Each structure stands twice: as C-alpha cells, then as structure tokens.
Length: 278
Image (cartoon, rainbow, N blue to C red):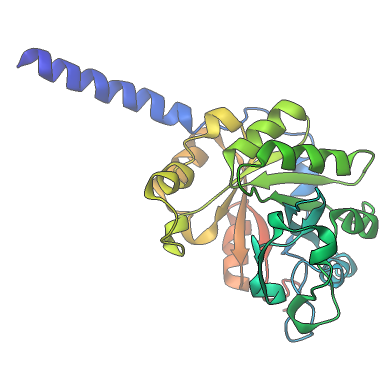
C-alpha cells in the first residue's frame, strides 16, 4: 500500500513539474513586438457586409490600410501550389461552391466571386503588392490534409524580399514547428481557443491540448492569440501569470471588449465595428 501511494505521489509531482513547463512560450521578446502591438488589426480585413465589402478581399485590405489599421488574413495552399487568401477550407460559405481549396487549382478558384460581389479570392502575392509595407499584417496559416511544411515553405517563399512588418500565427503546432525550424527569426504565434465551444466535430483530445497550450514547449511562440471569450481558462491564465507572453485577443466585436483587452495589455484583432468611432 505504501508503495502504491508513493507511486501516485511521484506521478502527481511529475505532472506538477511538467505541466507549467509545457506552457512555456519563447523566452525572448521578439524585436518587432512593440511595433506590431501599436496597431489594431482588422479581422480578415476591414470588411463590411453593409458596404458590400467581403472578408479577405483586396477591398477589405485596402479599407484597413486607408483607416490606419493593420489586418489579419488567412492562407490556404491550392492544388497547384498557389497561396490564396480565404478563411474556410471550402468555398461554400463565401463563394457558394462546395469545393475544397486544396483540391483545386487557382484557375478554378478564380472563377468564383466573393459574397455575390465582383471580388475574387485574392492571391497572397496580390495582397503583398497592395499593402507594400503600409501597415503590419497578421498572417494565419491554414493547414489542409497535413500540408504544414509545404504551406510554410510557400509562405516563406512569397515573403522573400518583403520588407513590411508582419507576424505569422496558426492553430496548427506542426506549422509553427516548421516555421521555427525554417525561419526562427520571424515572429510566430500560437492561435488557441476552446474549439469545441462552437465545433463539436473537433476531437476532445486535440481540443484539450490546444486550448491548454500544451505544445508551447515545442512551438515556442513569441505571442499567443487567444479567443477573448476563453481568456479566463486556467492554462491560459497560468501561462500569462508565469511567463508574461505577448498576447492578442480575437475576435473583438464591441468597444467594451476592446477596452478590456487593451486595459489588460493585449493586442486586438477586431471585426463588425470601427474602433475609432466614439
């Protein structure tokens, strides 16, 4: 009996030691942190359905630039290895076609228009040309069918020679590990939330690992982008308390939440309102 108790106590002690270690982000403060946090970031561009400006469109990114906001965007890789800017894996919600981005060529994708407007799904290279370093970007990598390394490779290739300010984030630890290996100098961030709050198809194990930031010791993120609704979850709170990482909250959709986030020292990724309005 004493041996059994000793084993249990030893396991409990091991877990107590390993748990906070697993939450540890990068210990460096990235050189771009202060400059990047000066901006508020328009989620998928400064889109507006009232003004007929679709999300993740060139017009939405132009609107963010014109209003002095940075912007967040999402990258997928097509079958012919083109980087396209779209949030979902499928075109169904935003372009009305029930096809997966990674299964078709950009030529096929370019036939579809966004949200019944004249806007096409943009190439990443067109966004880079449009922005040309005017405002910082938060680039989210969307992994499809295990293509993390390939997605990172093509993203880095597209960014060669780009002198504007940006950081790269992803929900997928394998993408961040590939980024850390290939380009450790780039500011990288771990996206996280309680995914099953909205998507019950997401496995409980993956959700547990993700929402509790248990891969931080592998990915060593320079910042954590966490859903503001979940900011009181224990692991995130403990990570902030122990390590004081750079933090962004998403997606902020009202002035009160924005004030709370900025009072806590977090960067803000917003949509559905204009933070500059009184």
